Amino acid sequence: MAIFLTGATGYIGAHLAANLLDDHGASLNVLVRARDPREAEDRLWHSLQLHLDFKRFYEYLQTRIRIFRGDLTSTLFSLSTDDYDRLVHTTDSVIHCAASLNRKSEKSCLNVNLRGTLEVIKLGMQVDHYHGLRRFSHVSTVAVAGKRQDEVVTEDNAIDWNRSDYDPYARTKKFCEHMIRQLLPEVPKTIFRPSIVLGDSRRAETTQFDMVRAFVFLAGLPVLPLRSRDRVDIVNVDFVADAIATLHAKERTQYDTYHLSSGKESQTFRQLTESLAAAQDKRGPFYLPFLQKPFTSSVNVLANRKSSIGHGAALMKVFMPYLTFNTVFDNTRITSELGRKPVPFSQYSYPLLKFSRDTNFTYPYREWPAKVGGSAA
Ligand SMILES: NC(=O)c1ccc[n+]([C@@H]2O[C@H](COP(=O)([O-])OP(=O)(O)OC[C@H]3O[C@@H](n4cnc5c(N)ncnc54)[C@H](OP(=O)(O)O)[C@@H]3O)[C@@H](O)[C@H]2O)c1
Image (cartoon, rainbow, N blue to C red; front, side, top):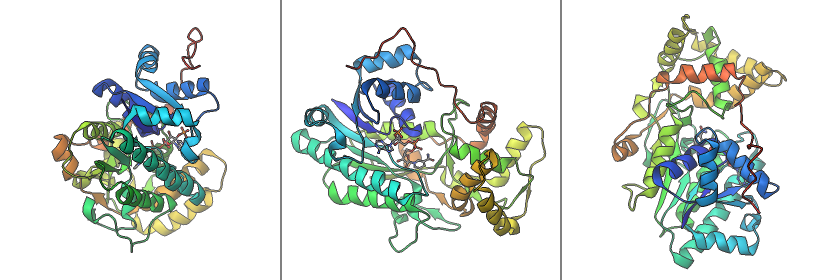
């Protein structure tokens, strides 16, 4: 029996897949978007090579990974009836990690997050009907807490239907949680809400550059239009993957919802920029919070430019609300249940920024070795 994992070709999903395979001896049924079986294997190799060398990846592919080539937004994931039946009958639990993070596209968030999650819930119900579903884990986000200012948000007071959301991503992710609670009432389920997932505390390499780009953009400015003592809740991806994999494996979890975040130990902008400046033997930036309005207007103008500054500005525009709301997400539940805490961002931010700058924000992917054929039919 296997865990049905969505989003394995993504940033968090790949960390999660590697953790489940290496540390939990799990077998995985993974949903991958691809035109043909060869491309599906190749896409999975791309996402997992940060964690596994080709030999181990190929071994897993032959023994413990089953690829289902499909799309969340199609009925039965666009699988044939036979493949869908095979998926139902070989799955004993679900980790739904895939999503659209496109904060600017309501259409994409509606289709992937809402219609997609409904399709995963339907699969969970089928599995439960035939042989019982051991656990349904859903990767949500702290963004479901909506617009906030200067707060410490706990799991139980995050959802407030009268509050406005920052974007379609946050709104649709909030409704995904609701669908899971309403439609899978009797099934053991866990909702994980990561905060800003940025970098791996064990290594500089990353395959995900959007947040890093926004961070590099900010870190390069001599003056920051922010309040130096505001806190920003950043969490390392290895902590997130480990937390999800560990709790998913448990027979019982203490709660059904967990913030995967740095919580009250989140660092301030001043702490983050000072550690970066020290690592580069530079002076830290000046903080002039009253410049926030003109800064936001300039970012909006720059965001329309087709250049690397334009790209950085476009990302800043999207992430700005999450950087200025000075809100952190209490992590007492997960840290006490796991017995460990996330690594403070200042301890691993410089290698991450250096790697990203040195590679010009692209991961140097290794291709599928020429001598090895695919295992797919
Ligand atoms: N990154 C963060 O800071 C952060 C923070 C809080 C919560 N989260 C949550 O963590 C989860 C993973 O985020 P991430 O950063 O790893 O995102 P990501 O790198 O963009 O990965 C998204 C994954 O979803 C898959 N996907 C998207 N549309 C799909 C579709 N129609 N059918 C099948 N698969 C589809 C993607 O497949 P393709 O490779 O084919 O595109 C990819 O594997 C999401 O649920 C997100 O809400 C992330």
